[in-house]
Image (cartoon, rainbow, N blue to C red):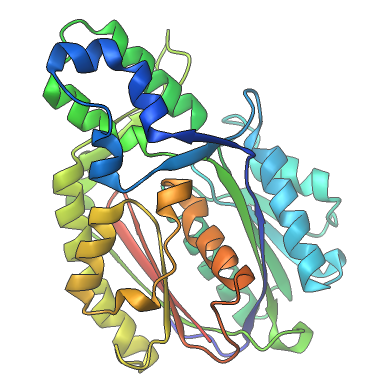
Length: 344
């Protein structure tokens, strides 16, 4: 899909103050580690994640999503009255009903003419939301739209540790399938998109490409259950890595066709951050230079749908992204789905 009239006006962000190291999580698992003869340090060695951040207990996704949304609006200089739709694209939600987007809508004081809904697609919620808003702008249905996400990894990590320690029969395989859950962090992000006539910046959304490989839907699944304080996630990390990477290769071929770009003309790359092995294999398979990348996974962990936009926001804040630069946003989410966006 190509876009001619869509500008990405601003990226908003919010990060928790509390940082928790991988070693600190593993020290809580020492009874299991000692029984299995596993050394502390394995989690960071496997994932490349030194630490991740957590919101204070009880923080609602809407609260931090609204904070990021407000940041994006302020950075853009766009009148909030111009926003025609608000999408909350996070994995985490305040509750099943109503939409968490409704809470954020009220917190931001958006117009009654501004629609609001949740969009759920694992780690691709924000990327999918950007395409949805861009399509509405291109069609003339709205002049501006805001995509927000608030992710809170603490409940998943805490429940994973409780579950592993409570299961006396847990072995190396159970620990291996739980490692992905221990990489999850917290954060919030927002993206404000507008029609060219309303834009204050020159940053355009050029195109997007997406593919699905839903035969792999069982490789990573998470849910809540009665009697548990938080969700649990079961992940075949190695199979997910290989299947996701193969899907990314096919999607990237479509992305290059859709944009008319080449590997050489792509000047910057921002990815959904999963882990060091994922990053290494992805860049090797797509034949992209890692020097063009802006990794955050080492100090933020995997922040779900927030990972891609917040990595862009931090790269922009550091001065690493320049005006006119051709930037590829590359996202893979469990399901499996892959979505790639082109910014210039």
